[in-house]
Length: 369
Image (tube, rainbow, N blue to C red):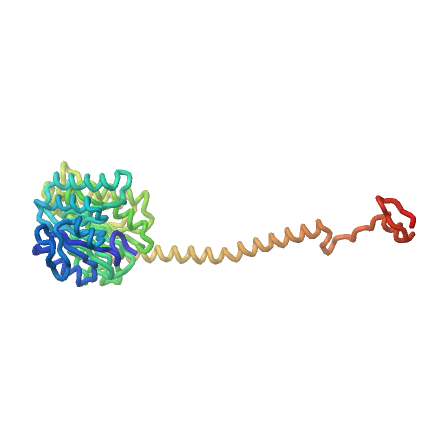
């Protein structure tokens, strides 16, 4: 199983004729993703890598029945592309573009949230990003820029703020025979459409995900909130990593949201929050496969022991029910006079007298012939 995308995902590419859009469309097609259309205003009726191009998302959806879109539109127009996809009824909108102004992203976020409903946190439409690498379900579909050759199907769900850090950790997991259900890059901007708690909720509900890798970074409080959520709601083992452990205070490291404000949001604080919630924290990325392997082994051992205990208890419960059934049956038999110890019933005196006299009995009196 997976979260958000699978082999049935029907994808359109907004900005398909641009440099990045065209290149990654080719990569997604090669991976096996069902790219059913593209959108570039003014270029409708043309093709890109054999994929039909439309002038609008609405036209593309009407013609292809697409249910997902990936956006490679330049930053000044990317927020409008999100609005257009949401208005066209796209269920999953993945914005790869970086450099969106926070105010633009905020407007797009509330547009998507308004269509979904504020009380429907995991409903549709769903926005992933902006400024993210997208996501991949190994062997089924990839939406975005994640390299497919480093991924493999397996039991580990991966969610990360970072792009290239995701690639590094996924490669190490694959090299240690720890495949993935879905690898999700949520982006590191201050405002994003899907956060850690959303991803954790989906992985917790996914039957094939047995363990989760969460990679955060300095800045904000998303990691602290995720740690509390894990403590209260997540039953599967989680391993965390926090990037920026050596970042000097007050410096922004890479992402727009990765800045320590007022002495809060440091790597040390985030790591302490995870450890307080019982989540092992890797000091360096290469420690993650070992920690995940250990937790998976413990979980599987508990499940195996639990299954064996239930199997051992089942015959005892069955025998107990059978024994109780025999006792009840014997009790009823004795009560009805059919048991071994039951005494034979005495014949009615009037009936005996009637047989001896050769007469018939009517209302308890002998009647002469």
